Image (cartoon, rainbow, N blue to C red; front, side, top):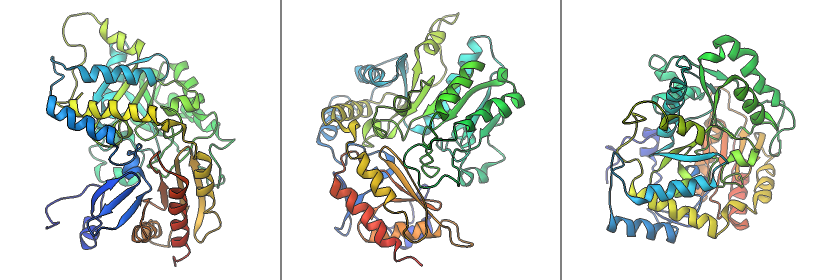
Amino acid sequence: MKLDHYWMPFTDNRRFKGRPRLVASAKGMYYTTVEGKQVLDGLATLWCVNAGHGHPRIVEAIRRQAGELDFGSSFGLGHPLPFVLAERIAALAPRGMEHVFFTNSGSEAIDTAMKIAVAYHRLRGEGTRTRFIGRERSYHGVNIGGTSLGGVAANRKAYSGILMPGIDHLRHTHDAKRRFVRGCAETGAELADELEERLIPLHDASNIAAVVVDPVAASGGVLVPPKGYLARLREICSRHGILLVFDEVITGWGRLGAPFAAQHFGVEPDLITFAKGITSGAVPLGGVIVRKAIYETFMHAQGAGMEFFHGYTYSGHPLACAAGLAALEAYAEEKLFDIPLAGRFEDGVHALKGLPHVVDCRNLGFIGAVELEPRPGAPGARAYETFEKCWERGVFVRPMGDALAFCPPLIAESKHLEQMFGTVAEVLKTLS
């Protein structure tokens, strides 16, 4: 098998193809590599395999659906599954969020939410509301809208000439003075005031469509918001008629001990984007959950015909919806959103404090990270070496710049957490 022809995403292709890490199968908490070695999945592969690999209920649902209806369009046609799944999602969503627009990924969901926001304001006679506010170190996918909204510098720098205009950014919530905090910091809610004190005066609220934030900036290094920060953003947005969008592609589906981070924090956004865990990663599926008042604005608009000129060929794909329904059944039946080991997970993250090169530990729910001191002139090198050595020892965790992220499947047991954190600790002690 040649590796040359596949251009891998978000990968150092030259480095990988010189020393590939190939998995042949996966079950539960473990991959099996092509060499037959077992590797613990400490990141739910990419923040998404919440029910564990190869869950029998999900596998059987996909198999059965493929034999019944392999594909059915949602463009002026329909089949039952997306309607059933949307109803199930609405029942789990925060109050008043009753409608779901399906996409195929989180990246598509963000661009969809941006279109919904602008079109909604225009229907209400506020067509000047076309600007968006994102946040530094936040990740909102890689389509042009999400790349423009996002604040991860490496994702933006090559595309500065084609990024969307009319987007500004709040500063991120990480404070280097607050280190080794368990959960949300007690102070820092005032960081949200930048929206009202700087950005709204600069752009004028009448021009701002929405503020878009990931409740926990996971891909930016697991940056946990201070207590009261998201609630204060909600208050400011409500005061100025600005929509608040939560990007819950990672924080949704039980990662923080509730269906969505919005419920964990007690904050009600206007739109929620989701993907990843909705199918436990088995089939691509994403979407936007929309507040009832926004949906009805489209439905009550003057004129007949199509209300929203937007969609994807595979929106509401039968196999994806079957996987989504099966995943939600598995989450409910096995009570995976309860995350009873959240305390042990937190202890495991913070047990890394004091080891060589560790400068911070952060966590919330079943998401965590350890930040390492960068090597002079080689940012990210120490975390990448840690990732490689952990893989060699049978544990997969993800490097993100100088941080190492942990996000195991929700089925993880104590022995899996011990293996993951124990291996990371062993490796850290070996680093130069």
